[in-house]
Length: 378
Image (tube, rainbow, N blue to C red; front, top):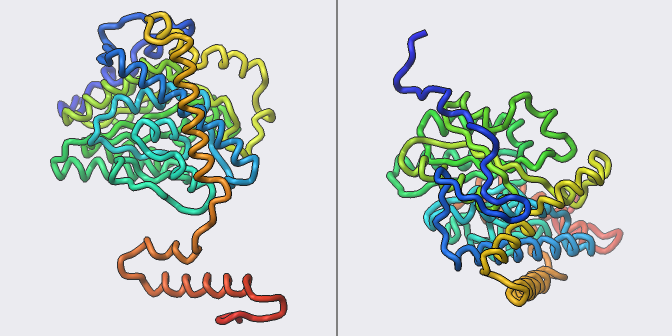
């Protein structure tokens, strides 16, 4: 077979060695010249604060769902290292296309967490301004955001825009056709896109061992002609360093990158899931010992950047922020369901007009007194 100089040698694309790790479980940092960290002390403390805030709001969101204030919620507990580390590597002009679990990334990007929770309350399909924060709307369908990201990145390249795009996926999303179409299009068109896969070991109840025979999810990158990296997703600094490298690759016009962050979902897939049906306490205990927040706190304490007083100060600020989110959501009235049709097309199609009329008639029937047909009723 004659090699094609326009295609990279696949041997250079495969992940090399074990997952990148800079922080041991006990918080010990090992410098690696291949994976430099360019964050100052203030940024490291801010990274810790973002992790604490994300976990506190996450805990509050689960409580809100249990109290009937949210319809459902997808927890990120245990994945803060992967999310906050990767988000810190983003430039202000970069774009994020999330799934339904990226609260940590949203916190780093400055979103109001209450706006995200309104999606789970059902009062809005998307309450935040995507353009202001360069953060796309939450995507509930599995892997569709990968296509959105690839398309946006292709457009950015055509426009000559100085931005990269990061699509956040779960390991289950890599079992969907949409993800593979996105990988292929992004690679063929040299789109400045990073596909950040949080391998949390389960696609709802299906373990990753039942989803692929590949050694790693990042190994799949070679089939599309893009490099694949694997990092310890419970190591916030490794997540940062690897994502930083991936973004540099994409920003230099060298095409997309697939990053696999090995992490673990400590809570249920969503609040409607029962994880005790497919995993045991022993497995949970093993991963609790690798908690990304505890690991990073130990590291910062060892460096003298935080102490008991600072930890309590950060925790108290996070509790206040979570309470603010709770106050914004609790008993919040629902809007007019017909509002759904106001943000689809600048000029409504006949189909949308007809659907709006059908919904209006149905709502009218529900509100009419028993035995009375409301206006427009059949």
